Image 1 (cartoon, one colour):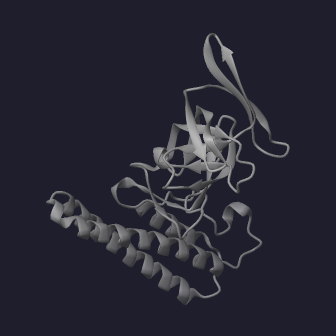
Image 2: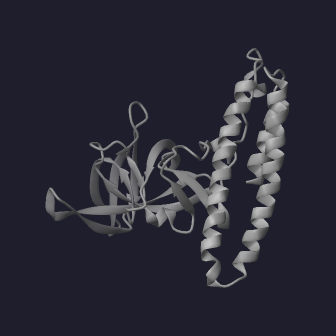
Image 3: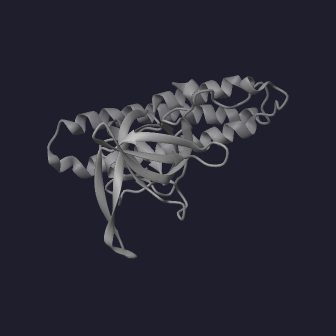
Length: 249
C-alpha cells in the first residue's frame, strides 16, 4: 500500500506539463492525507490482532477501508495521467509508472479482480484467468492432451497457447481427478500437472487440472487451491494487479 502511494507521487513529479496545476496540487494533498489514514488504519489493525475474537467485526471493517483506499489509489492514478499534456516526451518519460505496485489489503493478502492476467511458465506466456472462489482447484486449457508412460510414471503431452505462439509441453502427472458434469454423469478422469504461476507478488508452483476449455471464455481458472491465504477477491473489478513480464522479475 505504501509502495503504491510512493509510486503515484513519483508519477506526479515525472510529468513535465499539467493542464491544471491546482488540480494536481489537490491530488497530492489527497495522497498525503491517504498516507496518514493508512498509517493510522494499520496501527489500529495491529492493535486489534492482539485482542480477543470479539473484535472480528471491527477488523472486517478495517479490511473494507483498505480495499476502498486501494480502489481510490487506482482512480487517482488515472486522474493524474489525464493531467499530463506532454505527449511528445519519450515513452520512458510519460506519465506511466515503470513498475506498477502490487495492490495489497490487510494481512499481506493481494486484492484480485474477477479476471486477472497471469504469467505461466513453462511455456512463458501471459493469459487471462478467471478468479473463481467456488472452484476447489485450478484448471488449465490444453489442446491435444495425450497421456503416455515414461520410466514407469504417468506423463501427459499437451499444447498450450494460441495463434502462432502454440507450445507443446510434456509434464509428469501428479495425480488424476474425476470431474462430473451434467452432460457427463459418469465423470471424466483428468490429469493434474504442476506449472509455475506469476501474479502480483506470487511466484510459485501450483497444480492445474488439464481440460479442453475451448468452449469457455477463459482458458485458466484460479480456484481455492491458489486463493487460500493469498488473496481477497473483489468481483466488481478486473485486472487489479499489474501485468507480469520476465523483465520485472
